[in-house]
Image 1 (tube, rainbow, N blue to C red):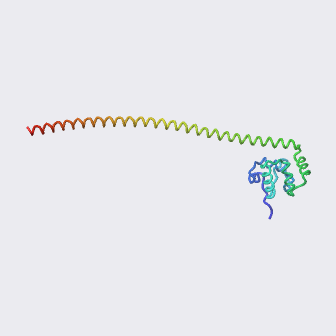
Image 2: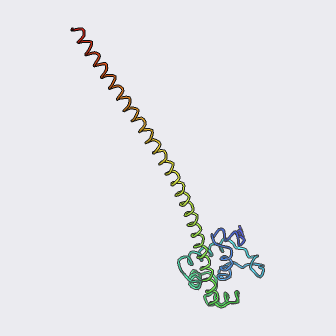
Image 3: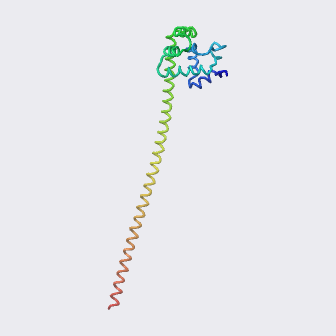
Length: 192
């Protein structure tokens, strides 16, 4: 059964990398991949089989662990893939028409751009979070103000209830005193 051929987009999605990174890797590690077939000048017609995706997965692992492009080429050669290291590097330079130093500089600049993008994304997330915190702070201040107003209102109501209770108690005490006084008078009037 023949391997399923994948486009740049499909292979990049499977590897969880950008299409531009995959194009760069297709140039850098071309000797370790299957023949590209008819390809346009920008490599747009290139297709990848399952083995190519596995090789590129290894490339991703090696680069993520801190290996340089040359070290990855040597590792792939040590695994018995592709051409000799010298011919792979020579083919890579012929394919790209660029010096190794320029490729390293380009890789470094791309990595810096990706890092700056990650930092910008992080800053945007922080700004969004700060906006939420500020809004929550305003909401809490508003709720706090409402609670203070309600507490003052309840304190006034409690004071009014206490005053009514004190007035009622005073009135009851006065009535009780009158009833007691009348009761004493009536007892003395019955005796005499």
